[in-house]
Image (tube, rainbow, N blue to C red):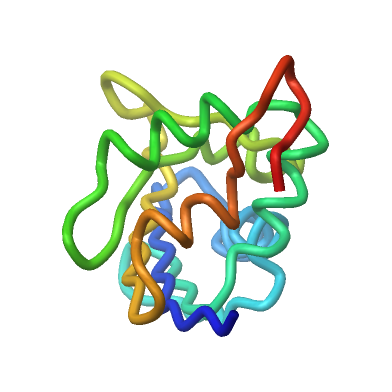
Length: 134
């Protein structure tokens, strides 16, 4: 099946941060992203969540990811936020509640094909007793 998605990743850069380190945090979880600096933020654009999915499997947090993705899903996509410091370390840590002091990494995913639900199933498949059902 062919998946067509547009992913936008936005990470704020506070005055106390080094822009390149924030860009590295984005690249850590989204290595295929084209990353550019904009005033006060770093923006990345890509067409896959392959590395993020690999990390979700590795960290064994597929069900948590599914819940987060589905809770913020709409007709054409879904969004989520990640802790910036964890991303810099290559760790997926969803940001829930109030944003981090230095800001969170905001990710928005527009699913063009096939469907939002099918793409969520690809990135974070259902599990049975902790094992992915793929």
